Length: 74
Image 1: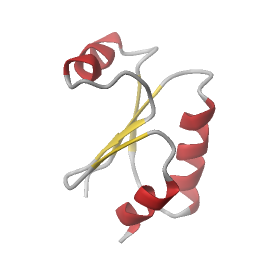
Image 2: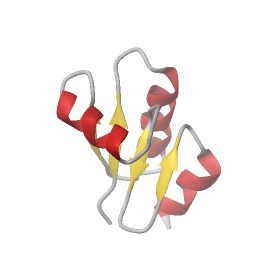
Image 3: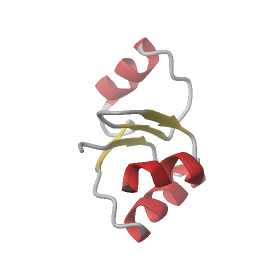
């Protein structure tokens, strides 16, 4: 499963999400919108207004939601 985490600098929820994914051995690719403004444009086009946004083949999670993130591990 391909998992992408959209994050930004100085975002506590982003840090908590990254830690959760790492602790649960869930591999992901991080896209930092501070470093990649095109990603920010894409997120806005999709209707997202905040980060973290975690996308996978099966689902999208917005914010730090351990209950939903656990589903990515299975």
